[in-house]
Length: 161
Image (cartoon, rainbow, N blue to C red; front, side, top):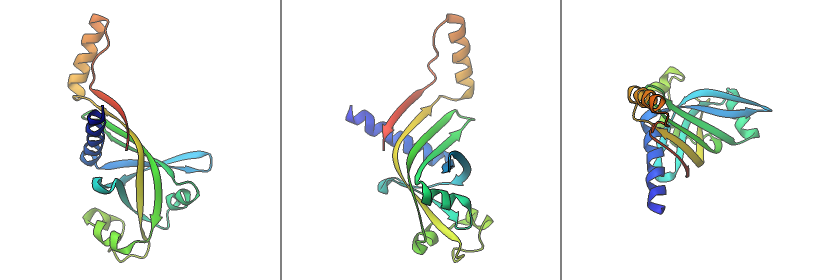
């Protein structure tokens, strides 16, 4: 059983790395807010990083309520991960320089921009759906409808991170 959990945790990390982008969900009072973010995964540290801007609302929302959700989705291949965790915003300039890359230049001129912050996510748990892909899934759903059975659409697991 422990080996199955370790395998499932590894699969969740692999899917997040492959997908690369997540919808970061925070709380704004009683409302939930989501926005797309480019993820930097550090599996060995059990951490997911994002670069963020101090002038945006998400940083304030996280300071008020650090519980977040990350939703990774690749609809084309029917692969998804939903992760809950705790977020911390920091001004770690060394980490900012380490994570700064070409995509970040769309938002900031350089890693020296004083508005860049690091968003550090520590995962609690995750759930993933790993399907064989859209076409195969549709074929399996059609076959299940004809045979009055449930289709096998891949793996769905919940894991403690």
